[in-house]
Length: 128
Image (tube, rainbow, N blue to C red):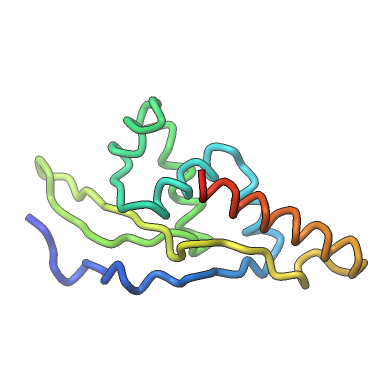
């Protein structure tokens, strides 16, 4: 049974979300979380669906989902009860992610180069 009160309009996705702190930047530099985030930009997934897509056991993803959710990079777009258990469907909060240049201060030149590198990496990954 789908709980309509817990559904989020998918058109509410931001076009670009700027990462504005180092903790969040660290979260997305993990390869597995980045793979998950890439999938969740494309469409909503449950943990079980993500696990199948990544060819992993679902138990290996719960920690990563929590990290992405705690840092507001993904959100629950639907909940439903499956065999007495609440199953959540997640979606990325934005179509693209970029790093705010102030995160990598104090050296402005180095920060801008790093921001450009990270932004390019995300854009290339999302295009693929």
